[in-house]
Amino acid sequence: MVTEWIVTEVDGQIASVSADYGHFAQIAAKIAQMPPRNVGAVSTRKITTEELVDMAGQVHWEDFRLFGTKFQVSVWKKLFELEPRLYSYTDLATLCENPLGVRSVAHAVAINPVAYLIPCHLIVPKESMDKVREIRTTAEESTLFKGSDLYLLDTIDVGEYAYGSETKRELIKIHLKH
Image (cartoon, rainbow, N blue to C red; front, side, top):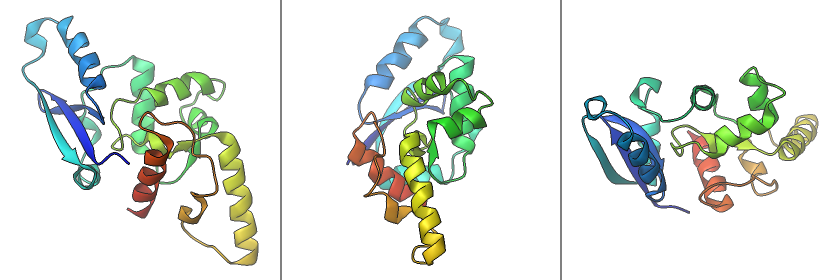
């Protein structure tokens, strides 16, 4: 799992959290096209996963300065507002009031520049959510596993993630515990 994260801030607002400088380069390219008066300061710093988790408990939507289309930012905002549980891409598209736009919503999720704080890791393939729902139903009937979905994580495909599926699986575990 990624143990060190790079936080990029623009004028004191979080623009990205990433395991590499890829998002920083994208942000720098966008800033280079802006008039200099529109940006005061750009900075990066490295933090641990523990510090990232702590940050998540304190960050507000207004703390972000995101560079994306209006649609992408609206998907990222919806992700930020989600209750901490697993969702399918179909579920998220419906929550974004775009049930026929699953692919466009999935693309916005895939290019989320703010790892963990905007919890794209909570979005998994529909087939996996179907399996989760089936297991939940069976568990409720047998009263064996009630409550958290953490016991499911080793049995489902969590899907792709920019930093690998194992990192995604670990971030899901951390997120669902908090």
